[in-house]
Image (cartoon, rainbow, N blue to C red):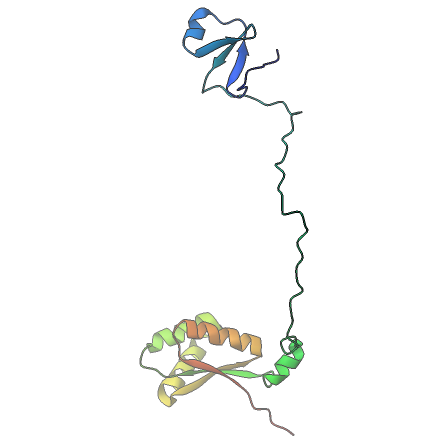
Length: 167
């Protein structure tokens, strides 16, 4: 049965329904077939039917992108940049401050830097008594990460290159 109903999604052909069943639905007759409209019915579309995409007009001409301008000063190689930042050894230092408790500083050292509780306590006490303490000496990337995380937790700290001794 081929439907010619203008709204085929909401209608389905019914050929042999009792009169009592068609009275409970909104029904009408079209081309010698009775169509029953029912919001609860599910219509299955045939798998052979394809949907066409809507064509988009982009103005007729292809888009042209300009090549980005690269500043030659920014295009350094990482090895040259590292040599300009000093040596491979960097110190992370903490300072005594009046804001953080000694326990909090020691806990941050254990959790962020990964030192033992004893080493964290000794480093914290050195900063408390002398005003400054070296947490450790690391390659630049690791030192920068520890410095950033300590700062994020409110620890007063800095990052300085280690002076190399020339023999």
